[in-house]
Length: 517
Image 1 (cartoon, rainbow, N blue to C red):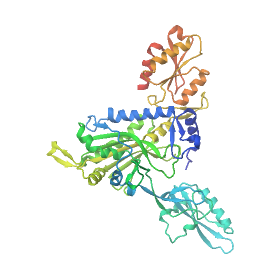
Image 2: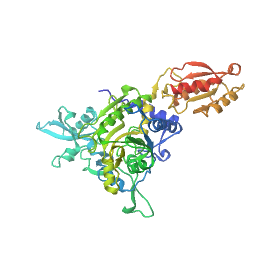
Image 3: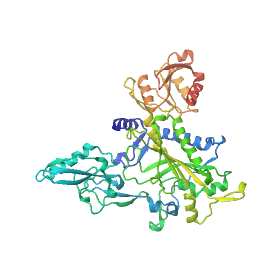
Image 4: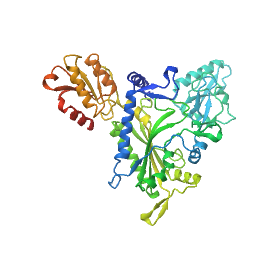
């Protein structure tokens, strides 16, 4: 199996830092694990993706199976909700992972990510077969690494012959019985046996307090998902908006999860943004709308410039999805660190009426919908939830757009869909004299009203093109000596590096047409 392309991720991470897409949070103090800041270009790219999602989900939602536009409205709920919200949703009781700590490395791991592998060897003096245990994080630690650790154990035991290791015979740490020799389990990043503690529960929600006193009565939580705010306001939206099932409520906002092992750049973080929509429908139509939204969300990511072959629909089987879910599919992307496999980008879950039923029970507020067109039929709507990470979506655009070509002025460049690019047009005077800066500035002041432009008069024209390529800017317009005579500029295309002469009078129209294409 091919190894994940970690070198590409290293280059991409360095490019993001160098060009101002993503910075380590609190970097001057050594950083804070699991938290990231978005620089000028990263903020603009993230906002562009958010705005595209909002337009296509709320302002101009897709057509339904009947060919008519869907009804979807927006919401911006509070990050901190009444603490009973999380009791009703099950997060207080169930939103926790079993964790183990490594005494040697001081690292913490999810217990279900620790795979224990038996290692057999024959001791030299009496040819006795011994059983020892090692562990591999996520089950993907290479066979040679486990072999290296096993050989160290053999040396400590006085030598012996190592028998073949079958990684597939490993078992999750949580399945190892107390009667087995847990003391011999080695932590994934440790060298010595007996490093892992017993599993213990670890809540993934960040607690905080409201009001003057900090005690259990004033304890609240930073939301781990945006969905519950939508369920709390479902009745308010229904009562104040001209909507009825089927309809959706969409929200973009920050969520917080105290992830045990944040990793892979901005793929898994402790603070992130979500783009979620809860679609309320009649119970009998749930599966129809579920299939509709899975297909629609796959189509949408393709429309953002993600190659079809890099997307995958993963249907979660029975026994692996949430107990209240009638169906769940993950839309996955082939990240460099998962290739040739895929990792989650967006989930589409058929949540049935679980959430509304829970909040109705705990709040004692009737949340039933009365269908006056069908004999005042009463029911709790079922819910289909397409939930995507905006932060993770940004990572997908960066991974998908990253190109490496040593024949270019800058070997690294970003092929981002033009309408999503942080900067749409770079405007350059060829030299900083002879009236060229004045013409360039006039063009900049006019076009910046219509799309994001950047004026740059420093360094050689080749270096300015390289900077724009690294920023993902699709077009650059250069004002040269001829521009003062023919009232035209040279427009360079990022993807092809081809140049075209365009009249200044029609430059705006030219760029807008390209952005819409």
